Amino acid sequence: MNERTLRESVADCARLLHARGWVANHDGNVTARVSNERFLATPTALSKARVTGDNLLVVDARGEKIAGAAKPFGEVGLHMTVYRHRADVRAVVHAHPPCASALACAGSRLLERPFMPEAVVSLGATIPTVPLAPPGAAACDALAPFVVQADAVLLQNHGVLSWGDDVEQAYLRMELVEHLAKIALEAERVGGVKALPDSVLSSLLEARRKAGLGLAQKPAPRVVACAPPPTDAPVEIVTPRPEVAVQQLESVIREEIVRALSKK
Ligand SMILES: [Zn+2]
Image (tube, rainbow, N blue to C red):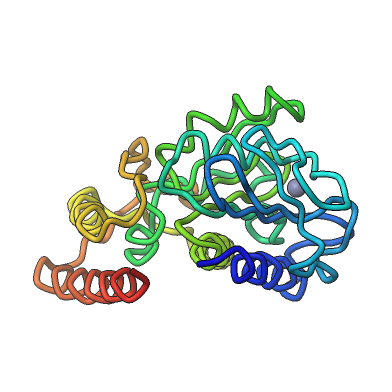
């Protein structure tokens, strides 16, 4: 992809974040890697509705401006932390989608343990929460350990950061995190989500590895259920019959592999 096309891709993503109501005021930011020393970045102090391919900045690997009229955004260090630890990543997206941000602000861990198979193939074994830290170097240090184990994170008391091998994939991962957050919050009204059993999780992670989708492979700590049961009764994990589970897995894996190959 040439730089002009990449500029349009970053600007399209920024406007989409605004159109979907995932940012307000000057919130949110998008970057894309042109080379290891050259990154496109949305400008600070501008609504994402007004981002165009022409008003993007070019920054270096430290987030310092190389070209462009505006200043780099304050959270650019978080993006650079992702690029530094993940050579496979070519785009990073940050926004405050309401449901996922609500979980981040409430300190909820509902997304840490997967409860839907498709999400494991797309996002890996966990969507962790990065602990709150002051902006700048401390926030980057807090994020770094999570970058190798995940493709999207909640930022405590803040929002969501996602990344991928192009702008579209980083955006779609943000979309998936918000969708999962909505489902998890709805599920709370009917007893809470039930985590996928380890046997299903390991098959999905193997499929993800074979499809070459991201580096995020490390399983999350075992959590029996993501919400406390309504009574003192033990939580029951419903494990699908093996033949049904295998059929579901095959279907998910086929779709994800076709999707991955069609992008190459
Ligand atoms: Zn933010």
